[in-house]
Image (cartoon, rainbow, N blue to C red; front, side):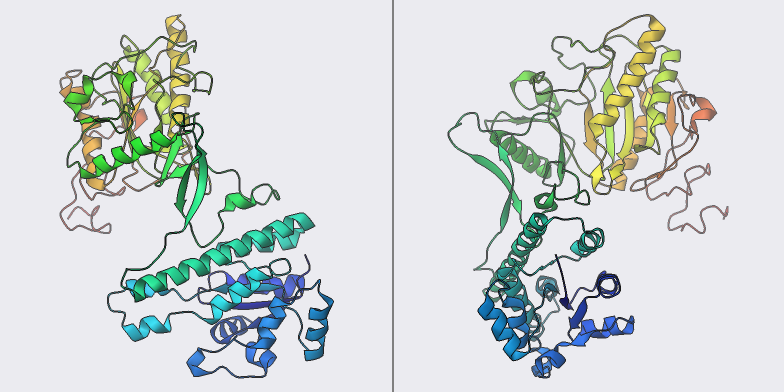
Length: 542
């Protein structure tokens, strides 16, 4: 696609200097801009032509009228395939504009401020920007109209590498036009809602996936999410190697860890479960069967048949277990063909820290076998996850862990990490025993840590578990391990972690528990920080 002239007029100037410099220096594109944007670009040494120079007319009404001029809109709206349009442009001395980079005044953010007055809100209603977006979207067969600042770097990459075919550019222009129209539609709805005091408005939804609907297969079910002002990147997938990878299913900020997609009724069950969890003030469990009467509470749930609905087991107690699988050391990852009701959907929160428990199928681990399991748990610390602490009990394992990003915005699956951990330790333990077959139950319990207080409570529970369970008479426990990473912290990389780090001092066991509010600097000092102590004073000894 050949771009000769670009109009840039943005409120959010994130990345605009770098983008404009690339347009001018690398591609020789003429830049047209308005007041504030032109000032920023000029100060950065990027030559621009002011809109009023093109229009032959100054800005009016304190900036309310800038780009609303025939010489601007005709340059955007002209159909390049229509000879009459091009003849009229030539007659008026107007050159076409091929790229429109506009974002709107942040009206919603402004009116969310309780101190915003009516007059201030009115001034945040964008008129010229909306008109430019609609004009460019209407003529998208010839004009590019990226809306979101994140789109600029990707567009620069495509231009630099000449990455797209003509068909690819056609699709990109159309997708950007959809994003522009979504932006103006949402913008107008927000203004209408504010002016009507909430009596008018609209919710814009984007279909995210088609759903199974076994009970009524003649009907088409779908899941939708609130649409953003930009086109989801998945729309552009496959046009070039520079386009983002395929996306994990996300719903309510969660990731689905399971081979089989959720159904319509699964969504209803999950929504009911989330609603119940939001009302709970203490730990609980829920068994749901397609919105029928459900029971919550650990005691009630523990007596129900796990095969009768969605089931999340508490870490204590021996759960029901179905027929053994053919896997050697841990039940293999579920596939579409192998799926049974025992393999449950686990919803993962990106970036969250988890308390995780998994158990042996039967029997207990010897001390040497616990060495193997602890080494397997710590192996991925600083690689695929941050392991905050772990304890290996005779028949189960507790972990406090934060999965890492595999790539930007793509999180390691909790299920994948646990599968690797169980597979490695199961293989080593069974080999040492001269045995074969699965060692670990295929399911596990996981809970998201929602606060530092909850994080510390679980840390203390994990550290004290050997003592409270009667496994040892005093702490420290040989198979307890902890890192220095606290709540919200991640270890980016850590050298020296291997299957050889086993126990005692080699596992960096701390022998003490973190206090609420303690940071990484205080956890290995052997003393408690004073109330109100800062990072600068905690290690001074006074």
